[in-house]
Image (cartoon, rainbow, N blue to C red; front, top):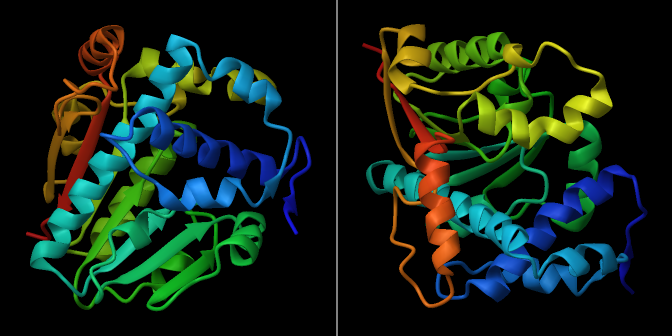
Amino acid sequence: MKYHIEKNTVQETLIIPLYARKKCTEKFPDLFQDEFALHFMDEIDYDFSELEKKSGSSMQEFGFLEVAMRQNDLTFEIKDYLKSHPRAAVVNMGCGLDNTGRNCDNGSCRIYNIDFPDVIEIRNQLLPAGEREKNIASDLRDPAWFQEIDSSQGVVFFAAGVFYYFLTEDVKTLFLALEKRFPGGRLVFDSCGKAGAKMMRKTWLKQAGIQDVDAYFSVGDTQKDLAVWSETFRVSCRGYMLGYQSLDLPSVKKMHRILSRVGDNLMKMKIVRIDFTGT
């Protein structure tokens, strides 16, 4: 029996990113694979007709490509940390139904997935925690969830498409709290400049009636915007689209490669890494 998803529900907001990862896998098979998304979409009773109508446009395909690159980039950084900390905690902040933790599982790390209680309730039904895995119901801004994380063997935090919807002061407070509680840990997330972040939030901002757009988090210059927050932050970044691998592949159109350069350079799309040195 298929799992029914109603329109305009929390479930729908979780299914759309899964749909995007399914389309990434289908359109860019030489770049990205998400077998979970392919399998899970077959188990869903939901009207995808409107999404399917738009899925063939070049801009929509570029959106799918963005999803693929973000997941690949974050996966690279997580696996890089696990090379030196094989038993570390891998913490998915704002997890939704994302499966990145399991995709990075080396057989000995511990996986934590954190999101709002209503999201975790759905995740527990559709993607229950496996071995060495825990789903945590919490607002990321509430530090109470820190107590759930066993960081004795190291910890790498990651967030995909999450901090665009946070006030800058909330992000700063969270990052400094993570640094204090988890010295030696690593935080990896995607970001972009003000113009790009505003575009990503456009619909949500309108619905929420938010006027003070500049109060929301974006990163133009990592050293100017982030490194000054703490003397013990070691901040680095790479281009979101082209910083980790070439897009000179059969599945990627020339226009998409051009848009990728525009994204990384003009829109300042980045994958940001902060190491909490504790020194």
